[in-house]
Length: 176
Ligand SMILES: Cc1cc2nc3c(=O)[nH]c(=O)nc-3n(C[C@H](O)[C@H](O)[C@H](O)COP(=O)(O)O)c2cc1C
Image 1 (cartoon, rainbow, N blue to C red):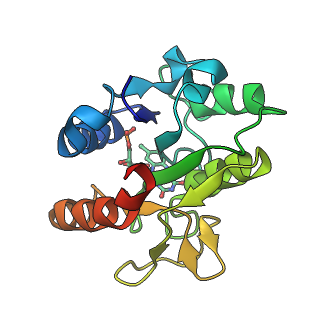
Image 2: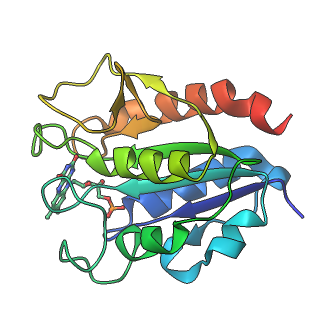
């Protein structure tokens, strides 16, 4: 089995597209990305290394039915995680958001994923600098760094490829 599992939430497809790009970059060590609304906690626990992605919806909410998405997503999945043991797992997170449209809640969902998987004991890798983004507030900040890779397909699409490649290099020791 591949070493790296990739799971994502999405409503309009951006996060799926990034998940696919990550899978392509990693090649054979990663399995095909899976929408989190088709996954169980045991599906995640089957991997030693996980890459998990989410957009932010509503005003700083997880994707899911409450924020008006078409399908269930991380909002419905995270409650099923309570009590699970991820202490032997390495987890890298990525979040998509819109810093111009939502400067007061920029990529907040990334913070929710960080908290949920930290509470389950996961070793979270791949925190990144907040330099190069303009926003007022984000719950995705851990001290002064983002809890994972932050991509803004609405305003900084041209920076995505470079940010993604640098981040993958940074977290590569996780599956070495
Ligand atoms: C109704 C709506 C609410 C949003 N709320 C936020 C938000 O609170 N914070 C943020 O950073 N981005 C927000 N966004 C931007 C999305 O997270 C961003 O467009 C993302 O790329 C969408 O990903 P997806 O195509 O995978 O669903 C919102 C977008 C929409 C349409």
